[in-house]
Length: 253
Length: 253
Image 1 (spheres, chains in turn yellow, green):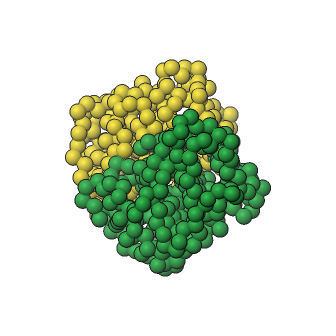
Image 2 (tube, rainbow over the protein chains, first blue to last red; image 1 turned 60 degrees about the horizontal axis):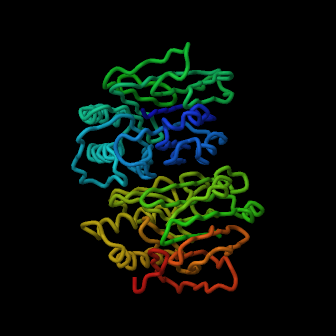
Image 3 (cartoon, chains in turn yellow, cyan; image 1 turned 90 degrees about the vertical axis):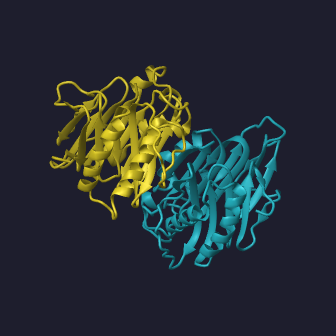
């Protein structure tokens, strides 16, 4: 299945991704991968429709110490849409002068919304269709530029609609917050200073935090499966939405 | 000044970019660079707000033989907008289910259009503002999805409006065509098979074409300055628009 990984931190955090395990199991995840890093409002977006084993992009991401406060990564196992660059998550659109990044794990059956707004899919996945619909409905729901709290309330109404079409585990960010929603499989973990020796290790995808300096540093991680043992990973309930701002889960989003 | 480089080919062409010269003159172009590669409708977008000398992204692009039919590259010397990732060209938006890529060389004074459409700048450059206005006006001008010829006619009306605000040398592509427009400095060259030994060499930015196989292979290059001597580079007239499709300049765009 596809794998999701999200990070939200209260300070630009030096994240290193490792595709070591992934490279060994390339057959299982040969349909591409992608990572988007926010640097304030700016965005770096690396995608590849080849497996990480042969990808110079994966190689770059491995060696590149990117300081980011919001990250969304996705490893693709195609369910709908052929294997092509335009079908590779995460997807990006602009709304209200911010980039929005979307990655989805699951499969939406028969989801064919009327897209009458300014957002159209470029590829042919159910995921990008869902993203365009979500952007369209967000845009319609707010006259001005909404706050994170207002966005969270709107998303709490919209996301269950998509979940009605099938498995829908989602990561979404506009650089201000990380929204995570699950129907079947998502876990989150909040970690605080000191991160020093901490390494999150997974066969497929791991993330290391370089030494952080301040006692106030805080980061939240969301992933398809817990990436470590012995840490308090919290599973999502079905159709649960969590919102992370400044490295911490918000209450009553 | 900023440098532009565009490529349009009739077959996905193996392009290698070199930043050799650039790395030596990093001080002059320390404000970032970016390259966007179309692969059919899909897009790879590499940007960096650091000079190419220290950029692992430049390093990747150098070593990565990307097969693309439309490429837009930009090396930035900041005029408006601070040096930040969100101010780094080329910019990307989606319209009519295609990605649009925009890079600009020049400076628009006092250009503050009313942006009432679906496109808002993320950063604070005159260039991204011009791009958003262009996308808004294109969207308004066509009820359905326009052809390249229809788009060219609309652009021929819109681009001189932007040129009224200052220096405006532009590269624009949606993956179907490459539009190039100049007020001061742009040259283009059409090359045909065989490309074998051909190397375009420039101090800052060069592009090599790997051996192409078919006698029908054709590619057009657009650049701020001719990249070779002894080849028939054609300068743009002031406010001239050229449209390249399948590697060839179109007549009467």
